[in-house]
Length: 309
Image (tube, rainbow, N blue to C red; front, side, top):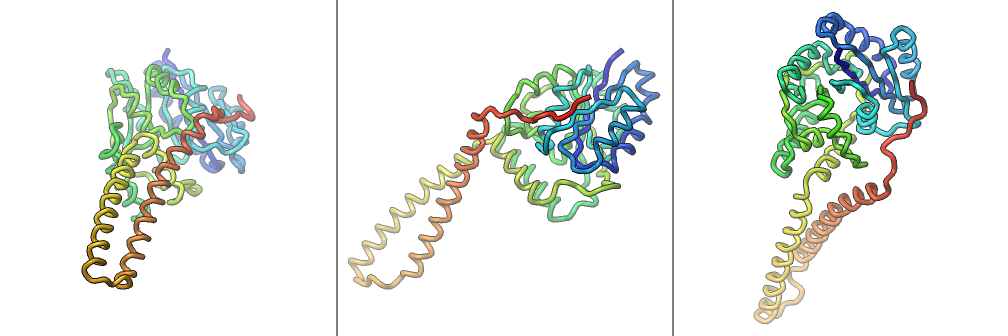
């Protein structure tokens, strides 16, 4: 018998826990046919509602249900890492509790792994139901990552992915504090089969990912898997130094020829403001990388457990 570990990160998903479990169990006959045992591991990311209580109710009905509850909200990245650490399965799959990751795809994913793939990953081919501005910036992020990073990150890729134990162990070997799992999936390599599906809208509750959180998350991804912004800052510094030198020569020549020290001060102020803005931008880029380094050298745990069953 093979063991499949289903990891479900949860943050204030009280309304979705039971419907997710019922939808997942619709595949039980397939698992039985394939001689696959199941463990369902809910990771409570410091929820403020009754998520843990709902999971406890499932645990009373089904001993295959387990859960880990954090001492506070550490974020989805920490929840996914905790799930991978606590999983015991030969196959491991990451799923959201809001049913935007269709459990109906699980049989196809298992078949892909049985065909020799190391992982079966999913990507959305549409963003139906999302605000247009959010969809636009999401597409721009994936295009940017393709250009500035050597790590492959597919447009529309979800965290919904089934992996072999070998790939899970490779991911767990990366103990970095600042985690961007989509990039880690690509960095570790392994043979991946991509499954496409239409976007599924959340039926209950509200998304925890607003535009601002997604923007910060994208910055984490860029700084975690690309040093190109540092190179851009360095090149910009050289170019503007050269431009400043040319402007100094121009001002000296104009002074010698026309002798007017007052004319042109508005343009000079604009140039100073522009260069100051570029300096602050470059300093901010450096600060992002320095902040990541600062958090890494602290060696703080990625998460803390309050309760575990």
